[in-house]
Structures are given as C-alpha cells and as structure tokens.
Length: 187
Image 1 (cartoon, rainbow, N blue to C red):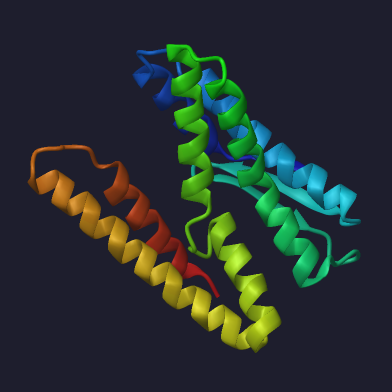
Image 2 (cartoon, helix red, strand yellow; image 1 turned 90 degrees about the vertical axis):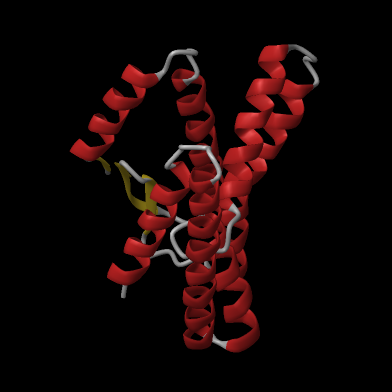
C-alpha cells in the first residue's frame, strides 16, 4: 500500500517553485533509487512490505510483522539505501563532467545524511540493530535515543553558527528541529 501525504505534495510544490537550477527531478530520482535499494533488499532478504508512506520528511517503509527479518537482515536492508547512493555517486563521478560531479555530490550528501545515527534515519536503524545484537533491544533503543539527541544538538549548533556567521540558510536548523520533534513525539 502506498500513501502520499498532502505535506509531501506541498513540499514538492515549494521545491519546484524554488528550483532554479533544475535539480529537483534529479534529487527525486536519487531519493527514489535510495528507497528502491531498501525495497529490493527487503524482498531479497525474505521480508514483506506492509506499506510505504511519503511525507514532507521523506519515505517511511513499514515491514510486515508476518515476515520479520531479524536484526542482521534488517541491518542489511537499512544499509541498502545509502549503499545505492554511494554506488551512484561513484558511477556519475566517473563521467568527469560538471553534471556528474554535482550528481555525485547529491548522492554523497543523501547517503551520509541518512547514515547519521538518528532514530528517524537509516543510521538510527543501523545503530539500533547493531546495539540490539550486543546489548538487547531495550538498551539499544535507549542508546539510539541518546545518539539521536546528540545528532539534533550537533546539527542545531552547526546550523546556529552558520546563521550567526553570515550563512543565512535554515536547512540545518530545520533538520535539527524535525529530528528533535520526531524524537520527542516517538514512543
């Protein structure tokens, strides 16, 4: 089941309006390839998707509880999205053109951002499954909550410093706010 929220459509409209360089479609394509990496990995590893939800904060893929993957296979499925972006970055950088370098940078940024150890990102899922294997699920969840808080704090501090020192871009501040809000409203 695919669910597309109104916030996703609104975000697309705003980004389309602001996209002076024509990068929106490329970015959406790279995000789509990222999510496709997760989907293919889940199916290869024997899992089943119950639904996919697109919202203004990205894609959420829910696995069916009828076919649980376990910690190691979920870890591999979480790694699949960033791995696709890293492979795409390598492939397009080999074109040795300004477009290729720009596309490589977009894929690198997408991969590395998603690898941050925040609960709402692939890196948080990866950390959760690694720590669950080492310490148990309850302790792992507490560790990931702490890591998520640290990520929010660091992004907020960097965003604030950039704002104060002349780079009037709110992207990091909004990202930190979103991660913090998600952390505070989660279980």
